Image 1 (cartoon, helix red, strand yellow):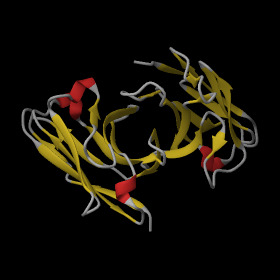
Image 2 (cartoon, helix red, strand yellow):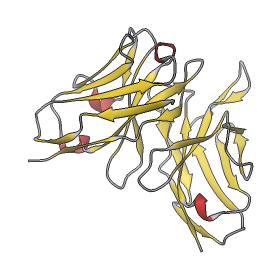
Image 3 (tube, chains in turn cyan, red):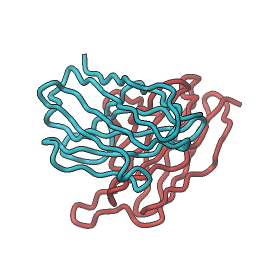
Length: 120
Length: 114
């Protein structure tokens, strides 16, 4: 079955770190660019980061640059998001999403998301 | 960054009637070399992840009912639900993918039953 499944969310204090993971199955993971997209409670969608097929190219939204690191392990079919120096405004459901074939930056497969709450 | 503006924020439509959602980009998302509009539409039902409906502004994703259609070019786009069904209650988002990073989403339009 083609699917993505996120894990690692939770409640953390401001300034701390958290690592999210996304397990992919049912498709050739290494052939796709993979993204993280987040959604603050009751709000819209915000793209966070992308990692290219081979893991060498990575891009981030300005608000997380220098704090978040996206990575992938094609041997394990996993996508990670290391989040450091967390802030209240990082509170959101974090979705991993598969970029459309051909490298285009829209998403044809989404996980169900994992909730990150940053609060003291 | 390209700013995507959707209208209205919400709309209520009777079952079987037409629903129309607009999306405007601050810059053209038409790529002249291939004449494609880099614009996608998603549907998000309560408690679920988004689902891809339309890409290239008017191409329906596999399995999406044909009551959903996308149109427009350049900076102005429309998602139309020709005959609203109960299962179409959701928030709909447009997204541009021409000028990246970052890719950007519209603010969403909530569709309800009147």
